[in-house]
Amino acid sequence: MTTATAERIQLIGQLSPEHRQILSPAALDFLAALHRQFEPRRQALLQARIQRQRKLDAGEKPDFLPATAHIRHGEWKINPLPEDLQDRRVEITGPVERKMMINALNSGAKCFMADFEDSNTPTWDNQLDGQVNVFDAYRRSISYTSPEGKHYSLNKDIATLIIRPRGWHLEEKHLQIDGEVMSGSLFDFGLTVFHNLQYRLSVGSSCYFYLPKMESHLEARLWNDVFNWAERELNAPHGCIKATVLIETILAAFEMDEILYELREHSAGLNAGRWDYIFSCIKKFRLDQDFCLAERGKITMLVPFMRAYSLLLLKTCHQRGAPAIGGMSAYIPVKTDPEANDKAMAQVQADKERDAGDGYDGGWVAHPGLVPVAMQAWKKALGQYPNQIHRQRPDIQVSAADLLNFHPEAPITEQGLRNNISVGVQYLASWLAGMGCVPIHNLMEDAATAEISRSQIWQWIRSPKGVLEDGRKVDVALFNTLLQEEVAKLEQQGRYSATLAEAAKLFGDITTSEDFVEFLTLPGYRRLA
Image (tube, rainbow, N blue to C red; front, side):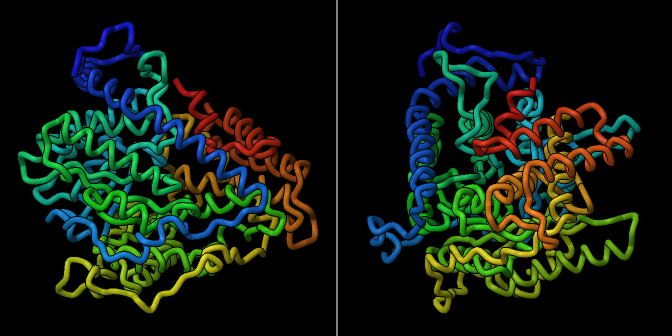
């Protein structure tokens, strides 16, 4: 690579000595080359998303692609999995905060997804601290001492580390290349592989990734080309980078075979990203007058469209020799209420037993205390095997109509509306304060669940079906009244005092805006330093 001039690479933000090691001149040259090679294609794909949305707004329904039928009906499989991705029966997720990473790696889970995306507020310090933490975690040198003097370090046996970079739609505003803001995806990925890929290969492993928010196989093709380019630039073996794709958009659900095919030399399977998937359904059909979903608590994995999606993902993965990883149960331990804790544990157990019984190879948890519960489900299902890829499911037949069978439409209650408001405001207040995942009402909330909360209200306001059980239409006036009341409750509790007012205003603005805001983190990001 040629050395980039200072005029063509602009850093906006303070750097600590540790951060300067991460953003070294050589690392910045690598990022600049990555940007120049792939940014035009990223922008073209983001424009393609806009064009596709216009067709949906005009009444077009998604369907399986005629042009790629030969891929869906062909005989092919992904490349063999590396040894440390064979057994993924329980995966834990969380932000790239130092103590949380240590606890997650020590949790007993088989894999840990360190998240630069939905559970992480992308402040400049958070992103760079996260890269420092990833660097140290890969080398098993990560440790932390709390202000109270408690020391945290890694156990002998730890989870396999998987990194989730930001989605294609997100940017890193603190780095500009040739006057253009850099992609958050390429920033997170680029720094990870530049500093760690050769080291990981030297110890018999590699860098593994989770890829979020994709909407088409062409977006997977871009990632595959990024991997190929990085392997060549870093003198790494072709195909050594592996990635699991989160199927968390309704459009990607129609292209699962194609996504696996594009990444087949780099693929580590698919994951059922259930919460973002629900959000995507609401977002994509927000103007469809026939579309309306019941309040969030009623949209379980057993409702028609969610069941169809999860089973199709399972069948598709196993047909192609790929792992199928189940999504997140948002329940967490409730230390202060034994009865509530028992209910939460029962919910997690039922969720994981269903996935394991269907044939999934693993599933996600949000808290170390849930790892043993989830482990039991897969221990029973797997027996002597590390996974269930051998378990084919030709009995599963899912049509386009099944994926679009959006029920239930009711109930929508005042309490459900209030819950959406409360969760959305609290999450945004936490996010603006720098914490991207937060326990609310005994559930672990991240950006995906907050997106459901605000998009549901936006759509209920505009849908003729957005009517409460008592007959009241959900409208802007009702929303504003309940918003004021819910914010007043939080003020009385002394919650989020520094960011509550700003969060309430942002939540109100994006929920009542005539134009639908694609992601709440986009206007939120503009408010971050």
